[in-house]
Length: 173
Image (cartoon, rainbow, N blue to C red; front, side, top):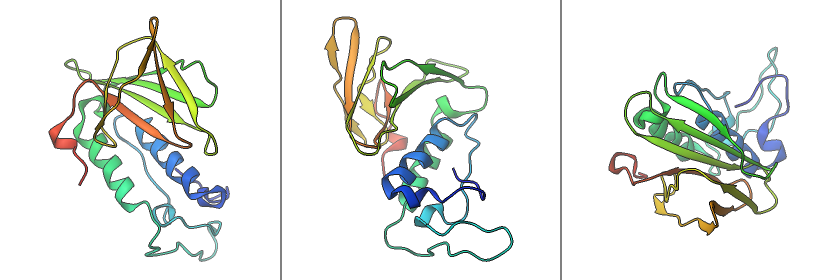
């Protein structure tokens, strides 16, 4: 989610850091993703490979639970397993990223929607499978129907991982 030669994600904002962490996890191949020391604590001091940088250890404002939730999802859902398929979905909005992930074996699939704009609500629209259950918030989401298209508005920096059904094993802790 971060590299040592760039400013820390939290320098932009905590919302941006959280969104980029989710993007790294949910776009990963076979669940292989990682974080740089301090990203979970919203560290803002640039990492120096030659010196010690603060990682904001035990910052009460952190994304430890979020990272745990992402790890649980990509570990347990077949759409994130080895050999699972991943395809970019055009959401008709350059501020949005859409990914269709599907299991290598079976019918499991998810639609990942990511609002890259951390300041404004953004509209996503797609035409394929309607997926009403958000595995990240554990809530029913009803996209609006506009002809053959499905439409959903996402909050600034929001990520949805939509499935056709709730998964008992993925319910938030």
